[in-house]
Amino acid sequence: MSLSAENEREFDLFITDLNGNLRGKRIPVNSLDKVMDEGVKLPRSVLGFDFWGDDVLDNGLVFETGDSDGVCMPVHDDVVEVPWAEVPRGQVMAMMFNPDGTPFSADPRQVLSGVVARFKALGLTPVVATELEFYLMDGQSEETQRPRPPVLVEGHGRRLKATDCYSIDEMDCLSAFFTEVREACDIQGVPADTIISELGPGQFEINLNHVANPMLAGDQAVMFKRLIKGIARKQGYSATFMAKPYAKKSGNGMHVHFSLLDENGNNVFDNGGDEGTDVMRHAVGGLMQTMSSSMLTFAPHMNSYRRFMSGAHAPTFASWGYENRTVALRIPESPPVARRIEHRVSGADANPYLVLASILAGALYGIENKIEPPAPITGDAYTDDSADRTQTLPNKWDDATDRFSQSNVLKEYLGETFVRVYTAAKRQEQRKLHEQISDIEYEAYLGLL
Image 1 (cartoon, rainbow, N blue to C red):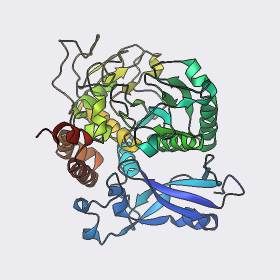
Image 2 (cartoon, rainbow, N blue to C red):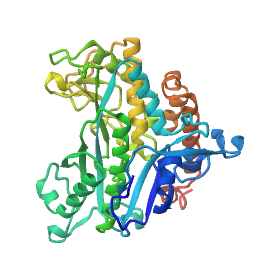
Image 3 (cartoon, rainbow, N blue to C red):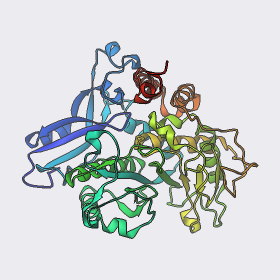
Image 4 (spheres, rainbow, N blue to C red):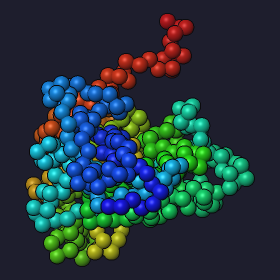
């Protein structure tokens, strides 16, 4: 429980709210032992804030409860160093419990924990990995609130402008940034694997290794997003996981790979061949049936829906196939023992805990109810006329919120409290944004009507 650097005087304890934003307190190191034993109190309403950190009065957590406290308990035994901080500091991740010690069911990590517990009751352990895309931008982008590709100091001062997918030269020109990212991942226990230059100018993807603990995988994704933004700022850049920062460039996705192990450590998706087991197929069937109602967790913001268009490597309807990147659910080519499902819907702007919870809930629903999927798609899902498009994904934020709020399956697997609180936050965000008049409206109409 000791801090990793002797000169650290403070540490951050934080929980992750519904939007994936970190909320907590900065605490002096002399309080560490007490915090590790007793946790830290915060109002339970904090987890239900809207994106900008305002109370959501319709969620039932504010005035109805007297804005009562929950207890935020550390989820790991050790404090980890924040290596990009100017003043040495540690961090402690936590999740919220009710005062009586029961899980607070609107905490995203608790939502995921509840789904994992249902797998455990069946003798199954989910193994998951995430792939997160982000844009590295000019250091002034956050100040101007407009994205601009970065100037490459190690690339003779040139500014990234063009797509250069899988470019090694592009990563060479950012070697100091990626070296520090690797070092920070090692320090914080984030299992970073491959780094890829992606389709947009300054867009990259870093894959995290598989772990047989979905809560830990969620923790690692949250820590990874924080360290990318922290190191970018330290080095004079900006970084964003916004789903679609450039209108005509590739969006940022978060793909999730997962399989299931039985009590003997065997992959229950593996039948020794390429097609996978009935259990895998039923998981696919459940994921397809719950995909449209889960869209709000995969695409939680107004901007999120700009990713979903034909030919943009983001699916527009629930579909699946073997070694096919045009579908929503891909079964990658691999040795049978590594048979898994790749879920390709979520944006990188989503809360990792809620993405994992929704995916695992859909798979479990399919397994428990032996749901058969339609035939897999073998060609281009965007143009295949034979594809079953009955499960079209909502392409508007409001529509996705309606489907989410009305889903009895999600209420059963994720909890009615969570569905209520999350819906209320999204509806408040929608009201706030719909009340704003955009620049393009003034430019188009003010002098002409």
